[in-house]
Length: 284
Image (tube, rainbow, N blue to C red; front, side):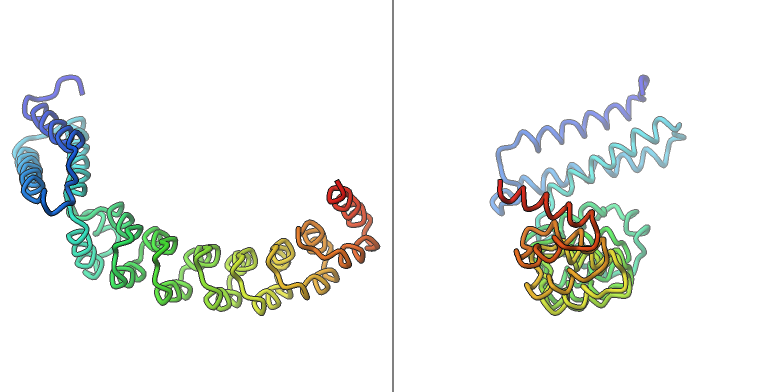
């Protein structure tokens, strides 16, 4: 906006100065020894936010001015997040996500943005009780974030493996951190998209692989045949499956020589030619 009002230009200058003060500081604002500095910067942030709010209520703003002030508010939220300690963030998320508010209502809360919630999900210091609350949130993006957290408690992951949203269960199924016992549960999921991801996961237990090899959905069996971690006894079973499954099996890096020899005599000429290519490649 080329012709900003003096008040808006002042707000912009104040936010920029606050950003520079934080970014130029060599101090760790999370350290307890810097509590006084953090409190001072937080107070400045509060003052600017209050001034912007008062100005917005007292003036008739045009669309450009609303856009500029909206951007400044977002920048102030970013600053507030940088000034918030881990303990304070955890307390906020415990309060907000246990409040019963909808995702839209949470997004409209100044004190906690969705991005802050996702950052907490990835924070190694986040306690299990926070994960338990996030796992019950209606926003799938929040659930996706905690599913991939390396420090996710197994009992919370099991809760998400039973989530009503199939996309949440699918992400649990494809995550390498998911333990075998949970993958065994997901191997019987009603949604084939979930079972496909279980069939592709290296952590899937042998018994689950055996179940998936006989899945009614051919795409599931194809993923089993392509997985280098299937139990040895499954190769012989899959070698008698459909054409597409046998094609996937030929390309499996761990296919035993005796199974490859069987498929070299397959009734399908394409599979026989594929076996020749594989053998030639291995010999080279």
